[in-house]
Each structure stands twice: as C-alpha cells, then as structure tokens.
Image 1: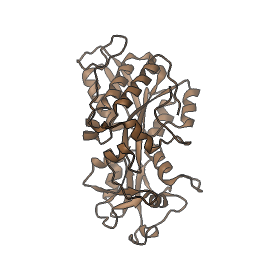
Image 2 (image 1 turned 90 degrees about the vertical axis):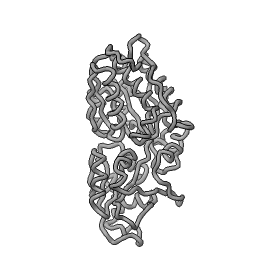
Image 3 (image 1 turned 30 degrees about the horizontal axis):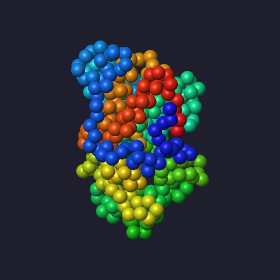
Image 4 (image 1 turned 30 degrees about the vertical axis):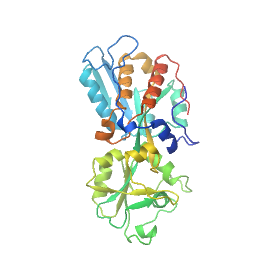
Amino acid sequence: MASSHDADGNGITRRKSLAALAGVGALGLAGCTSDSGGDGSDGSSGDGSESLSGDIRISGSSTVYPVAQEVTRQFSEQHSEVDFNLTRDGSGGGFNNVFIPGDSDMNNASRPITENELQRCRDNGIEPVEFFLAQDALTVVVNNEADFIDSISLEDLGTIWSPDTKPETWADVNSDWPDEPFDLYGPASTSGTYDYFIEAVIGETEADQDIREDFEGTEEDDLIAQGVSGNQYALGYLPFAYYTNNPDSVKALSLSEGGSEPVEPSLEGAQSGNYPLARPLFTYGHMGKIQEKNHLQEFIRYYINEADEDYIAQDIGYVPSSSDMVEANLTALEEAIAGEYEYSA
C-alpha cells in the first residue's frame, strides 16, 4: 500500500496535500472508537473489559507526544493490564536509537520517515506502517516585549537561522529592527521539528552544517517557550500545541512567504494549507510486532479513531484526522495485520 502523503524528493510533505487529506470539516468530526479486532477480542470497544494485556513501547516525536500521552492514558483506563513505555526521543532520535533497532513497537514523528531510515528499517527486517494522525501549524515566537515585530517572512527566518549568513543582530536582517543580538531557541537536532524547519525554511546551505549552531536546542518544547519568555530579543519555533499551552508567556508571529500577506498560526491555517509552516504528524508501527501482538493491534485501532476526536483540537492544539484519513489508516492497519502492507512514499 502506498503511504498517504505526497512527498517531494527529500521526503517532506507538501502543504497543499494536507488540505486534501484533511477533508472538509476536520475540526468538527467525532471519532468512532467501537471498532474491534477481527479475532473477537474486546479491543477498543470501550466497555471496560480487561481482556487485553502486554507491553507497548512508543518512542519518537515530542510534538506528537501530547496526543500519544492522552490516548495511552484513556486506553489504560479501559485496559489496565496493558503497560505503556512512552518517551520523547525526537522523531529522528526515536527512529535511529529505538525503532530501527527493534526496541519499540511504534515511533511518533513530526515529519515523514526518510529514505535512509526506511532502508535501515528494512535492513533490520522491519516494515514501517505509516499512520497520518493530525496536522500542526509550526509556530515562530518572540518575547512579549518585542514590540518591534509582529510578522516575519520565511526568507528572513532563513537568513537568521542559516549557517551561511548567521547575522549577529536583528538589525543585520532588517534595519528597522533593533541593533540587539539574537537569543535563539529551537528543537534539538534529533527532533523531526528541527528536520522540518531546515527543509521548509533554510534549505540547502554551503556550510558543513544544516543550521547555525549557536542556539539553545532541546527536546522539551515547553523549555523553548520558557527561554523565549526570559529574553526580550529572543526568537524560537515550536509546535502550535506548545504555543497554545504558553499563550501569555510568548508572542506568536504571523508568517509570509514570497511576498504574500502574513498569516497567523492557527488550526484553520494548518488544515487549509494556507499557513506557510503547516505540516503533518504521524505515528509509525512495526508491522511484525503488529502481526504478533493483539493488544498492539487494538491500541493502534484506538489511536487511529481517537485522532479524529474534537479534543485533539480543543485540548491539545492540532488539527484532528478527517474521516478519510481515519479510513485510510484503518485500511493500512488491516493490511499490516495481514502482512500485506508495504510503505511507499
């Protein structure tokens, strides 16, 4: 089965494809969680049965982590004999250090799996099963006292973060901005958000590294907001969900691209693809383990259906799955259970 994203040559999903996959009215759709496995197990029926048991290891993205955290919490209430080990390793860190070695059942990711990661999975006998869960509006933030700026272009962002240009002060980029040095914050290099930002904002560089190195990198997205809130001339970027959790501590910038009008970060902008840094969010399952573990099958089925629920937008801050995305994900799960799934970009 082909994966549900339309990627460019570097594996980054195009924004306009997100609108098509999301469908009309994704923000208002309610998920159905009554589907159960074909083997007669209770699965995700929600009747409180304790028939499922076993361990599930989930690695990967800190961006997707809030969704996985809530879904595992709910599933555990229904199936207390299923034990979860959920960690924030970053998309790349989770793939490279946990999922590809075969140590996790699932890996959350804030960007598509790369060709290199896919090949290494297959070299280790793993076929990754892609589930497109939600959408994010990656948000650029500044200090609340930064009254000199309300919007920024992707081109200026690229200038600020590129190792080729590496300006020292705001005024080096725009003479209307203060002659004050940057204090930069962002995700660590193991993060899928880091990878996405480089591809979408910086692009290819002449330097030996992909991004300037003099910034504070972390897998704890809340720490990015905290860092920016502590310095008047700070700049950072983080998932929309983490901005909505810190709305009073930092200011979000509207973004423009190619001379367009600036667009505020929002769920509507992410859903339509009009926001310049709209991006997809995924989880990947280990097909062999899906075939072996009934409790993993039923958890993934529950995860897929919960990604369609209103609270994904209202309480977490991402665009939920559409009904079409849910159906595509459930089809991928059934193909994986049958051993017939094959990932294709």
